Image (cartoon, rainbow, N blue to C red; front, side):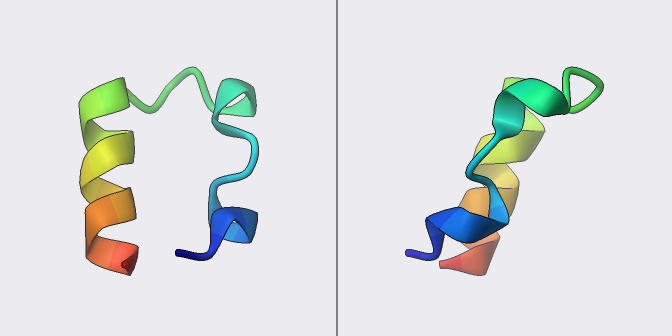
Length: 28
């Protein structure tokens, strides 16, 4: 699980938490 890809989700408020989680699941 590469956290370096989404280590700072706070800097991207334009991306909803759902999309963020979805992206994380896709990157796993």
